[in-house]
Image (cartoon, rainbow, N blue to C red):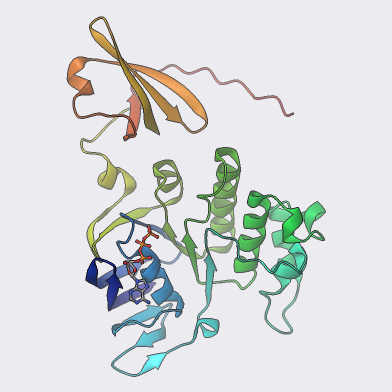
Length: 293
Ligand SMILES: Nc1ncnc2c1ncn2[C@@H]1O[C@H](COP(=O)(O)OP(=O)(O)OP(=O)(O)O)[C@@H](O)[C@H]1O
């Protein structure tokens, strides 16, 4: 169980903003922080990790106090059992992938977990290459394995997949899901990608102007009306065109373009760039295996 309550005055070009966060997470849960740029998401992660000191508050993780302003407790980042992965991979350029991951091991610790992580991140053949010889997705797998080799209680993911193409992103999400199941760590994710949020998180907290304004399951937070469709996908509107009395909406769902026919009433309030949920009750899909290439 993780309980955190902290506040800090933040400063931007527009003036001051009070970051005031209260959160409670169950062991193994994944919470996404969602919100506009500048809302305070990264600052909240930096405070949890010990990289940024709050003005006051208390952070308790699995019965251990990491920060308590009242008792003058403030564990340094290296004493907090945490993994932190950012958008830029922050790997050591002169070390191989394997050495980068091993860097996370504490002195005298067995390398069995290192081998296991190299296997489940499919880095076996790449482990002796340096970051400069790896693609973005491969580097991010190394960064994740490096964070996990420390067996963190809490994994902080600050838009770690936002620079990656859709397929690579999807593989990395699968890896995070698998690793979470296997090792049982708790995750706090910062993401703007609705599909990613729905796939990975149990709960979403919407952060606006330094405070959590809304909280719930992804469906509760993102859907205006309850949808009871058998199939649901999230996508982005790329085009809207009128044909006779109906409208054709072109959506990007994952890496696929899908056209959906809607009525004039349904089109109200929708515009290009909106994130939407597509649901269908009377949907009889055919599944076909995609050939391995
Ligand atoms: N150490 C600090 N002290 C005071 N203010 C800070 C500090 N670090 C960041 N800020 C300010 O806090 C505000 C929130 O920044 P933060 O990076 O936490 O937002 P964010 O929600 O993560 O945004 P984005 O989605 O763009 O990354 C910004 O205006 C920033 O200038």
